[in-house]
Length: 282
Length: 277
View 1 (cartoon, helix red, strand yellow):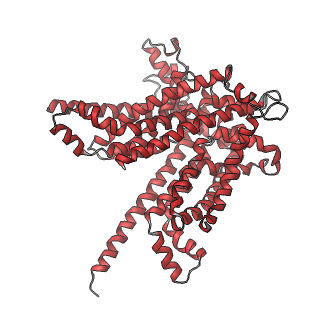
View 2 (cartoon, rainbow over the protein chains, first blue to last red; view 1 turned 60 degrees about the vertical axis):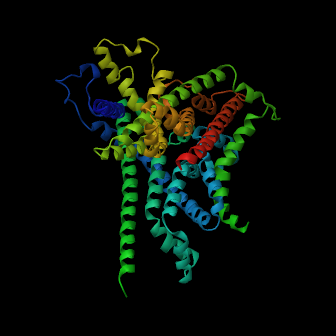
View 3 (spheres, one colour; view 1 turned 90 degrees about the vertical axis):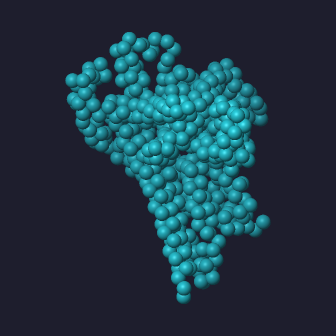
């Protein structure tokens, strides 16, 4: 019995170790290739610490195109995040307050971008293009389409935020104190949804910084497009940019983790204090 | 009914930037060269080389989905049953959240530097006398794409299946043991049947996920082999007039495949919530 349990535990640990190797090695291989200027066939114990440098990244920073691409991607990320909040927050609040029955339908609509993936969406954009050149010729016209691509993630995080608060009580309290809808939204709802809005914004940025399909087909020069093109002339530089972009994405997700965790801790504290207030005799 | 007015901005946004493009794809796909309605391009999109592309795409997507389901479920089970140290489970779930969304260029670059012809693991294996590229292996072939796509499929499966695995009640296992069942009986008669809807659902989700991926594949394989890249090739404009309709036909078929698998996924998820909700 005991040895059987031991075997089972060994099996689990083996799975975790194999998993860790599979997920860590490709990243290590890419980082080594990017930052160590030693050919694979020269690699050995003697050369393991030779030739490491960050110069490939600083070289990429010297390209004008890099800064233009970075600027465009940051503009797109900002625009997409704002558009997402502007459309989704009122919609989600409205659905929760007025038409809870429609929640399933809205949730269904928000996962439609899975059914129409980026490559099919961009095919549609190419069809529309001759009829809307005034709009689609601008690089910033990507913003609404990126907001669509991020929709399944962003709506879910805002929806989860709304489920976690007592929306009805908050709005009724605010309204009965004389606040209009705008004041309620700006001064009551947005502050109490802060962590959900941060998550949604970080998710949007991660989607925009990783999106390649639409930019590639429409020949828009975003950061991922620069990465692909730069790799043609300097493979190590391209890989170094990929390392940076993965680190940025990981930081964004870590930020989401911190935002949601501190939120739960704070709400626990408020729960405790409200309990204490009730127990104190007045 | 007046309550639905508040949905109008959202619906208008979806209509303009998702549904109109999707509709345009079908409209172009169902058009003859002279502009009248017809199914020529639509049928052309699933014959000849296009059929080969669909076959190739479906083969590696199904393979990648099976690998993802099995490995993801094993990993989720291992993570959920390892009690100490406790950070392991948190690490697995947090990492899965990041890696499940890691399509794109960096993924392709990672595997090119690991398993490409000059990749470090390729060279290490060569040193030990194993030639990875002696057989049919290639990062752009079925085998290679399965290895690469597992990098986001396995974490996605962990996220899908972990709640289901945690939903298995210890009481069910105890009941099975009390009735004389072994560990095998438990999984054969209780565990797997309860998990089955979420495993099948996971398969469909992973399949759809692999089938529609563009960026990673573009860096690993040549342009006309798989469906998303073939669509990109036709959209690129290097084809004669009239032929571009085939590209829209391919895109329309892709939407149909995605709708079928995501629809079935949606149905199975509801099924799975019956026991594990």
